[in-house]
Length: 382
Image (cartoon, rainbow, N blue to C red; front, top):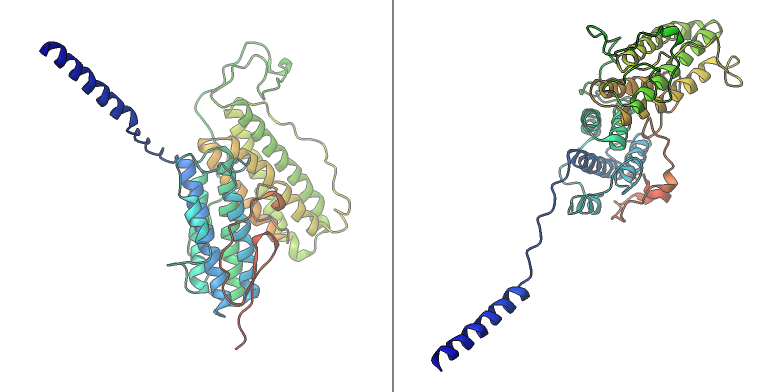
């Protein structure tokens, strides 16, 4: 009997233990670490919220002219909405397990250690813009384009705010001009023995008989589009120069030379990518009224070059990406020269009506919330 009793007790103990193990909930796996791209997006989102809140606070406290700060607050509101957009074509949403975005969103109007005066806000905008451009060099696809556009606009906003408020300009470097034509030893594109003149182009941007290099076909197409945009800009400047006022002709000549350099640099990069050279057209169709108001038309022409560079930022990698980021920034500056607005995120045509709204926040006294989450700040009467 004793062996049987021991056996029964052992089985009972085994059943109890197995039930206990089954009822103990398994530990949840640790949340995945955000990727480099996601960290860059969240950092940009947080910075936009902090600077937006600081701008609202400065204006509501009467520390600066609200007319100078309103455009900055509006810009940062739009950028924050674009940066928080989950699953959009421009920015990836928060990763599974990431809890950084929501807490920061709720703290949008309560800055803790942000800029305390207009001069500090100018420097914060410049520092953030420079950081966004740097992150754009290594982020993935659409997020890279969003970061490049946001950084470019923040640097522009820093300069405008400094001029409007009469404070020192940004100390952060606004970025260098795009590099000139690149060269490489030897030929990176093996070709067949067929004559080049009889080699037809294929749909992926290479020529028949050309073994595709390491550059993806989409990058070759984006490079070709950028070269085509620069060729059209050269034609537009050549048509506008004789009709510009003397004070405008000098800067226009310099910008014409810049476009020629950019076209040559793009062609060199396209050759290294084993792409088909973009033939120069004998002429381009100019917008109605181009010759009657050439200065205004040049602004529109410069703004039209932003989208091709934005696409190239999103599609390319490495040195081509860095070149595209710098070219996007310089294109936005040229658009401003002629009075054109490069937009809140140069390189992207945003439909603000489709962007998500920022979470409701406590608005500082003297502020009013406008449709779309934009704050209008009016200093209290003295």
